[in-house]
Length: 131
Image (cartoon, rainbow, N blue to C red):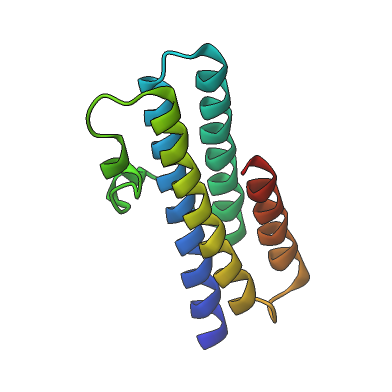
């Protein structure tokens, strides 16, 4: 039972992290006027949404209204008028934070079934490549 609770807690944490990342990138895409940045930011938001769906399947939970999740970590980074460089710096900060969270969870789930660890490690590698 404790094993399952630890698994659920860590995977739920990553679902929340990906939600925060998705919302931050959607906001960055909305704020930028640069078409290539807008496309890149939207692709990262879509990547986070896919990550969330994979993790939800892993826990066998239905996709739900994610509004109850924590305020996006990047929300405060996007207040005011931002240049493309400032937006880029903000999303780099967000990406670094999310990658650190993934590293922590990977350590905590090392003893779980291989399919769980593989999925989380695969998502982490994709995040670091985007960084």
